[in-house]
Every structure is written in structure tokens, then in C-alpha cells.
View 1 (cartoon, rainbow, N blue to C red):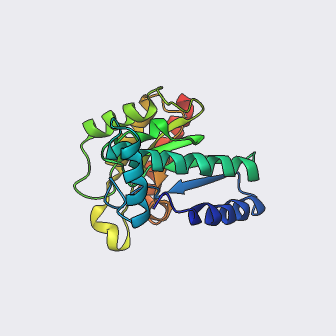
View 2 (cartoon, rainbow, N blue to C red):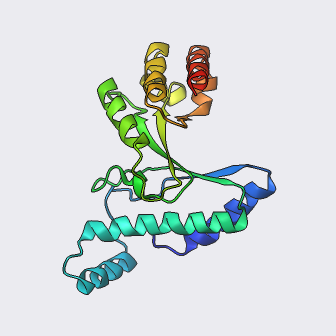
Length: 213
């Protein structure tokens, strides 16, 4: 639950651990709701009732959106307080279905949004292009945040049935490069390094991406 105060206490330990290890940034992931829209714990129900009672124009989605954004803001403030020089990055997952492009409101330095799905059936390239354009569009309410398209790659072990060939990987990175994106996120590193064809495709494509920058 994004409203659980224990999250901040745990996050503080993680931030300090990353700082002490010499990392230059920290990345938050899996901030959201497992059902992609709400939390039904007793504390959330009480807060939601109070929220709706306070203003008749309020709706349930606004409350649950506020909880996610509030948590991101707290984490950002805590990160910059404990380690001002570290970059704060996130991957917006799980998606918040009432507002699927919530990343434009999230308080981070670099905000990653999935533009290419890990699992089969893989998203069509038109959807990859649409989500990439939306991610890099300059309309963040937190003005310092940079939209960062995230490309998903699984191809080993139990995930081998979801593999993308080198051509498909190159096409997806090419879409991101042409979008004018200032950053790109690719997951998962183990799957990339375990497959020579995938490694080569990612390396070659990223070299072209860097040259265009």
C-alpha cells in the first residue's frame, strides 16, 4: 500500500546502503497497485471515505492517484536529503489504469515507462512508437523529470519462450532513438548478457543511439 509509513523507513535504509556503496543513483520500481487501480486495505478505505466526504467533486481514482504521487514525492525528498548528488530514477509499474501515463506527474529525475512489453504477444511496433512518443513528450508537471522509454527483454530460462530476435530488438531501440529521447532503460540485463545475439543487437543499436545524441 503506497500509504504505508513503513515504506519510508525501508527506503531510507536502501538509500543509505546505495550511497555508502558508491552508487550514483537509485531506481524505484513496483510502486503502485497489484490490481492496477486501488488498494482495499482498511486504512485506505478510511482515508478514501474521508477524501470523498471532504469534497463532492472528488472521486476514487483521484484518491488512489494522489497516494502514488505522494509516495513518489516523499521518496524523492528523502533521497535528495540523504544523498543530494544521487539521481532518482523510477520504472512506472504497475501501471495505474485510470491514468496510464501517470509518469508525467511523478517526482523523479528520470521516469521510465514501459514502451515495449516483455511477454508474448509482444506489442506491435505502432504501439511501441505511440508509447515512446507519449513518454518523451514534454508535459511533465514536475519540470525536472526526463521521460525514459523502457524496453523489456526476456529470453532465457523459463522466459525463453518470450524471446525477441535481434531484428525486433534493433527496431525497438531505433524507435526510441528517433523519438528524441534523452535516456533509455532496458531490462533485463541478465537476459541480454546471456544471449550473444541479443547482446550484439543491444550494443550495436545503443552505439547508434549515442552517436545521434
